[in-house]
Image (cartoon, rainbow, N blue to C red; front, top):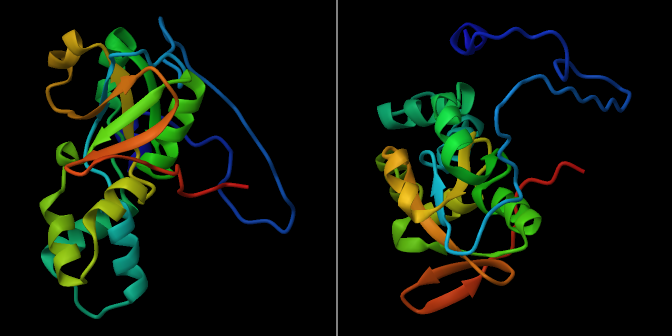
Length: 205
């Protein structure tokens, strides 16, 4: 289903388990302008292609091994088992973004890669972080903090990128969640002021 949707084929890679440690890497593609993790510039805005935190909530629901799931819980589970990559944004990001990274390890964790590669300071504005209604219902039902999921949940496969403010209208379906300044580190802006964020999340090795 996924291969049909993205018009691609699985020809190898990490598709099975093994008692041996196997490291493999291949890159296939072509672009007029590569948009890397490095490239974020002072005065850029920070955007995300969609909601985050839903996949982690879906995984936790699966691990509960319940006999019955509400409709919103079924939708959260689907975001974990069948994520949809926003491939339709590739052309616009190629033309208008200064830097980009996919969110697989968590928003803050992957933002850490972009921030370090670009050697800049990035500020997340908490009141701009989008809270999906299904995640809000989940957190209310199970007494969770939605921002823990939004900031640190993984496997959302959204795109996190920076662009000049004058290009924000090119990304009408994305969310502006912060901005880039001169300096170093990741910070979150709340009513009480700025606080540093440690780029924690999934670590591969």
